[in-house]
Amino acid sequence: MNKKSVTFKNLDWDVAADLYFPDNFDETKKYPAIVTAHPIGSCKEQTSGNIYGQALAKAGFLALAFDASFQGESGGSLRHLENPGMRTEDFSCAVDYLVTLDYVDEDKIGVLGICGGGGYTIDAAKMERRFKAVGTVTAASIGRLWREGDFNPIPQLEDMAKQRTAEARGEKVRVDAAIFDTVEEAKKAGIGRL
Image (cartoon, rainbow, N blue to C red; front, side, top):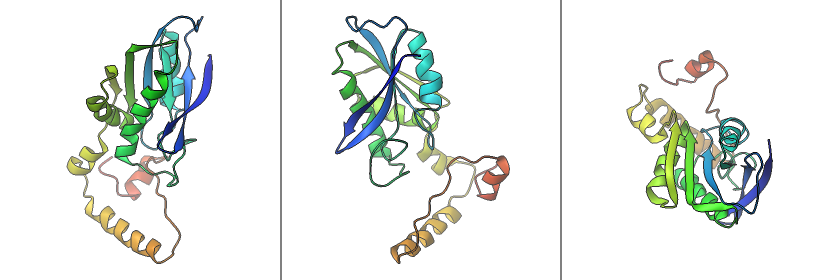
């Protein structure tokens, strides 16, 4: 598989991405491009790149799989932050990068999001008019899950409030897993009915 590691800017930090090329790529031609977005708690090397990015390239598209700001190899000083506004802005920054490439057909740019990335994809496509096609794979809206999910968020919110108070008083910053290795770990963490 022919791919190239690239970066593009979101504000003052670099967003890390992999650009996947179709077989027999010819930089003198114009290609349709697809921006691919990873699930929450994931990275470009997983589903958005190594599965969908590669498959899209085999189908003749350029595919740009990026690590969301604050995650993976991308910049941003608050590591592992899930910031919906910044995550949505990453998509426009990805398109800004693609339109600078002579071999990208700017009238044929689409977007594909996986899981939580799919939820952000829908949000991004509402504002980013340069996307001409939108697709998702098991799209999940984290906001809707919190509002309408089959779990009670109040204990988690109370726990977060206590942790913020502890951190404000100088205790170590706590980072919790968003994806668990087993169903039992998720249940122990109080994540819904599994």
